[in-house]
Each structure stands twice: as C-alpha cells, then as structure tokens.
Image 1 (cartoon, rainbow, N blue to C red):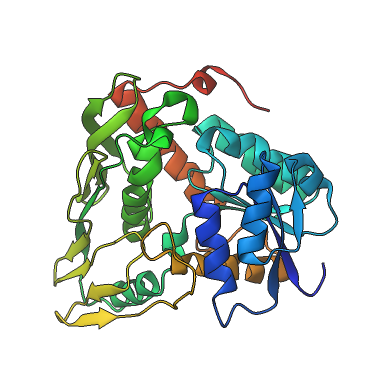
Image 2: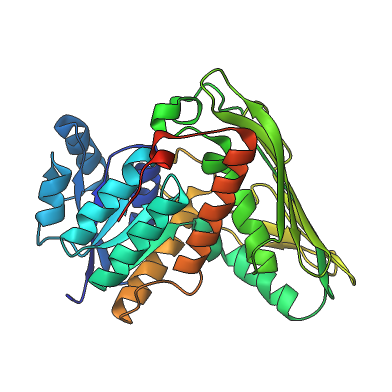
Length: 340
C-alpha cells in the first residue's frame, strides 16, 4: 500500500460531487488524494475532473478498476449498479466505499461482503451518519448513563422527492426506504445495537410499485421501540429523539448528518462543519469527509471493515429493508435471483 491513499470516483453524479468536494475542501484530510474519476459519459467525467482538479479521467469503469493509479473506489452510482460495480473493483484488488444502500437486497449484500472477505479487501457501506461528530458526542452522552435505560426512539425523514427518477422508478432501484428511510433504520440500530424482534410497516406505493411513504415500528427486547416515519411526498420535521428512563436527547434537523443536538441537560450543542468554495447538492454534505477519514484509517490498519459501520450492520440493514419492502409489496427482479 502506498503512503497516500488514492481514491477513484465511480460515476460523476450529485453525490459523487459532494463527496469529492467534502474531501478536497477539508483542511485535515491527511494523506489521501482523489486521483481519478470514471463515468459512462466521458465528457461528463472530464467536466467533473476539471471542476475538482482530478488528474485522471476514465470513460470505462473497467479501465478504472484495472488501473494501478488508485487504491480505493468510491461508488456513487445508482442503486441497481452497486453490487456489480463494487464486485468489479474488488475483483481488481481495490478497496471499496459504496453508497447506501450497499445492495438492492440481502442476498446481494451477503454475496458482496463474502467476496470482499475472500479477497481480503476493505468494504464499507457509506452510511456517513455513523461518522458525524454529533453522533459521536451523542453516543458519549448515552454511554454516560445520563438517559438511564433507553426505551424509545422516534425519527422522521420526509423530503418532497416523489418526482425524482432515482426514487420513483423501480428499474432505478427506486424506494423511499432505500433512499431516505435507510437513515431512520440506521439511527434506530445506532441507538439500540441489536436486531429488532418484530418489524411492522405500513405505507403507500406509487403506480410503479415503488414505496413512497411508510411508518415503521421496530420492537426490540426489553420493551424498547423505534417509530420511524418516512415520506417522499412532503417535508417533515427531520429530527430524531431518544428517550430513556432518566431523560432525552434530540438530534436536530437534519438528523441524518446534523451539526446540532440538545443534550441530556437540555443544552444546545453545536459542532459546525467546514466550508467550501464550491456549492453542495445536499444539506451538510461537508460531513461526507468523515467516512473517507475512516476508510483511510481502516485501510492503513489492515482492517477489512469499520467497527463503526461493520459488515454485520450492513447485513442487519439489508434484512430490515427486505422485510419492510415485503410487507409493503415492493418487489425487485433481483429478489428472484441467487448470488454466489
């Protein structure tokens, strides 16, 4: 492994833009560098590289995967491409950070994780929330015992994206639970740690059979419960509250990567993010840099997974997503396929 961790960016879409911008503009990113970008549209990749000062451009994902110029790939492609692209880069000896959801279903996720472990390469689902400074401070509050025994979690995530193709079209892996709902699921798991003993989901589908709104109740042992509201039609008050026998903590909007929370004493705690000269597409995207720092740390340490976003966590999320989709009647073609 070279001293500098060299990144290759897979696809030149909005989330890839934000990831690259977050890394490049962070003053403490350490010894990591974004070396190359690949997209199916060479012109788009070239424009992307020019904007972000990326030295190498590829018009083929395969060529980037074969390249000796990179150590790790960031996959920001659409959901249906995650499994095949991640496997492609792993096949060619590259570590992988893949946007959430890791795959479209549990079978794909299990297959991909097994393949990465077999290849002895690092693989992580890009659940960037787990590396938020606010989440880390919030977890210390919980561990201090200030909340007592944790009993209830409530999370809301609603944004009006019902007409966005990546969400509304089944062939693009559209699904509110996979797009924004995953943030609510990971928050509940971040708090309660173990798998729910019961999952109940109600919701609505669009004309393409894609879930657009749902309320999910996760029941855990010891009478603990999470209530999750997900809506692609309207904007909700996108915060999260954790209640224990001694008190509560509220993660302010946007809970999925916040800069503010209300601690157990009722005080407002702010942890600002760094700034950039280039605009972001999504709120608080500057925080995407923290997962790149974790990937770099893990690779240098010879780890195949991150303790903060482990393979087991990705498997649990995939199980929950499958269960919720099944209860709502959302079916993908890949659900009928088997993966090695």
